[in-house]
Image (tube, rainbow over all chains, first blue to last red; front, side, top):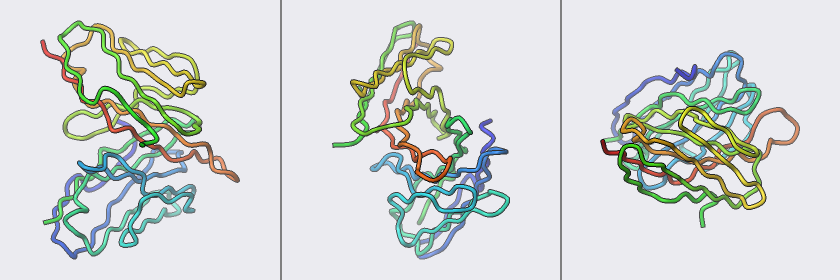
Length: 111
Length: 115
């Protein structure tokens, strides 16, 4: 158990819909990273938050947004979903020493 | 060209064999991570390296910063080692804070170990 909690584990939704993925980092970790893993693109960085503030953005679509709350949990919002958004979405947090801890992922299927 | 390249992409071995997976990167990094992903999807961090060599059980990871190259070795491989092994590099820390940079991933090596 990495200590990073992601919910839900699986999500099936229709095109055009909006979903929210949730992540709770390990206790004490201030950084949250969101990654997308698709069959054709592999693992790609989406966005990073540190102590409530956005720190870095990667290949995140404008239809996607995220935030980190005062209790340090984070939510990734995906809207106007398309078939190509089907992927595994991982959340990770970093320890003070820089070690990476991953959640179990949310498998999103858009039909 | 990807910033992180792994080889081989697929690797099949017999139980007991010595296995090596290679990773080359082209950017400045603060650390390199080796990750393991089993079917079902969860990702586990095996090693974090910034220099030298680390060993954990049958797993050994090395890094050569000057050559921008790392290797993951598995001694006496076992069918339970079958998984995808992913090399990831962490970019340098973002100025003005104590957070660590993002991870950039290789494409992964699919390892299958037969009994």
